[in-house]
Length: 129
Image: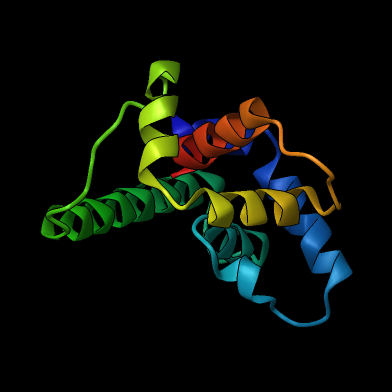
């Protein structure tokens, strides 16, 4: 479903735009899905083969992530969809680091931190992984 959603939301068009913008193959284009779309756009496979390859690589990546996290004995597993976990998240991390990353992500200078915005940022981060 995730790969189908990526395709439907414009992954192929995004890669086309990046190809037009950059002369070289940027590091970001080596990410999951991008290199497979490049392969497809270069005529090396069908659209169906590209989609299946992205799904296969996504499964492999997820398996590697789970293997890594299982080895990390101090990991605390939380449901990213449960907003009640925000307090656990905020109490378990170095909030200054999150705020710095949030500020950089917003690409702006801020005078005060809105806790709700930081929590929403953490939820976005956890949902994107």
